[in-house]
Amino acid sequence: MKIFLSHSSKYGQQNGSAVFVFITLLAIMMILVTANSKALFSLDQDIKRVEQRQIERLNASQTNTTSVAESPAMPESK
Image (cartoon, rainbow, N blue to C red; front, side, top):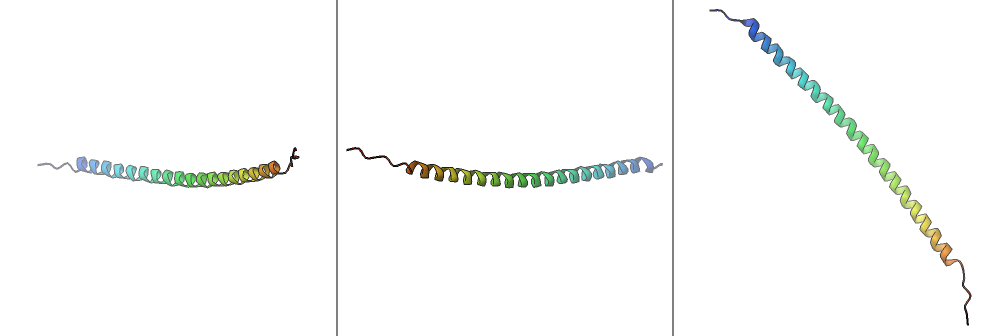
């Protein structure tokens, strides 16, 4: 009766390397997710800043338009 240890150890090495590859890919995916979430947060902050500037610009232009429209006095006709 012969026992082939080399055959079973070969499968053990393959299973170990598959686990290593899986953990490595999982780590790379987690790094990408973290980088993407940081980029998304940064873009969200940029959009909020641009939106705030637009609101300030539009409010300033409405104030200027209102004061200009009220300024000219029209003579009353009799």
